Length: 100
Image (cartoon, rainbow, N blue to C red; front, side, top):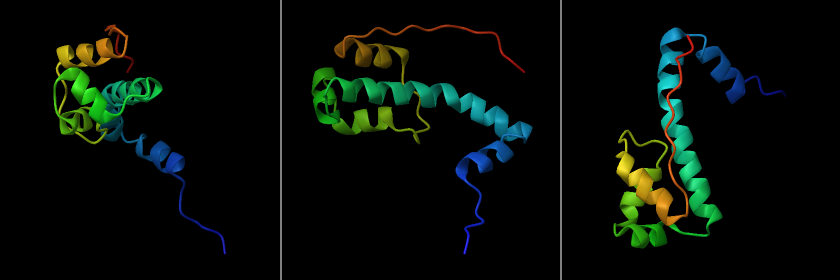
């Protein structure tokens, strides 16, 4: 018996054909990518969320929320800069023309 359920990629491709879904997806992709990079950098440095919290003088729950891909809360730029700084990085912000 074969599984006839669509793969996630096929589901996503179909969903992104809807202009409203695509607009929301595009709006969230920047934050998602930033948080994914933050998690990658922290893990690459061998730092746990608890250690990161100590380095930033905050609680582990705040780091967890900051890194959460499902959180609707956007961190302040200063928070992201502090996060990067303690890991030996800086933050670069660029503006690009919108592609419609």
